[in-house]
Length: 192
Picture 1 (tube, rainbow, N blue to C red):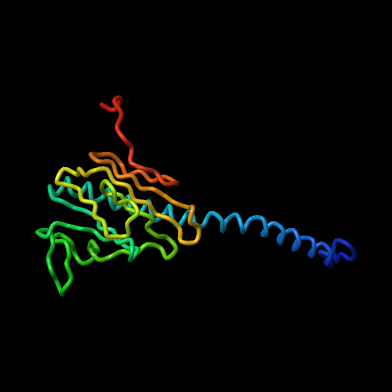
Picture 2 (picture 1 turned 60 degrees about the horizontal axis):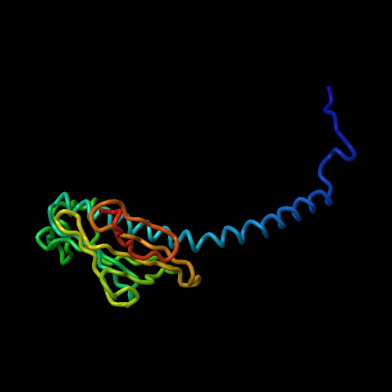
């Protein structure tokens, strides 16, 4: 039996069909790629905000568990932050401060952690009139995990209007990350 060979229009794609498919893919790429790139800056800022919120939640929990003061220090000029632990919980090894209970594999890094290159601190509000000043700020949780109400604002260096807020509740609860510049929530009569 000999194989059947086809000749004519069903033998393959014509150059016109190939060009049409390439043209359609090009048009779809022009529509899709800018939309993806537009979402990228927001994802960068939101990711950093969630990472800091998770660190703050961890430190609040650790303060309660260890019955000690833990915190996070922010340096807006350097675009970085670091964990603050009680001095009695640290051990100096090889010139580096480490937690007493940390082994080599699960070491809690106490050095400065930088933000993503395009993400910046817009402000850190830890008191009455310190919202937009570029000085270093510290957020401490006492031995029961309490702190005064705080707000941290992160923004994008190229998209100035893109801001995310991290709201730190005073007594308990989860850190709230939200789009836009949020302010302290003020208590009303209904809250008591």
